[in-house]
Length: 65
Image (cartoon, rainbow, N blue to C red):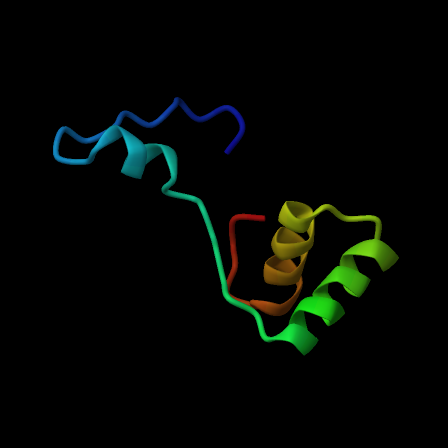
């Protein structure tokens, strides 16, 4: 994946949508937010690394890690 050429934005996709195509957002419940913050702190992750780690760890069909 590291040595693959950069993707080119399709003509029908806006610049902002292309830029944010990997953006993930969620509205967590207060308890889940506290648990997530504690998880990140315990593992020394920022929010982005914490989400990436959780996805890579718990989504077994993930092949691009």
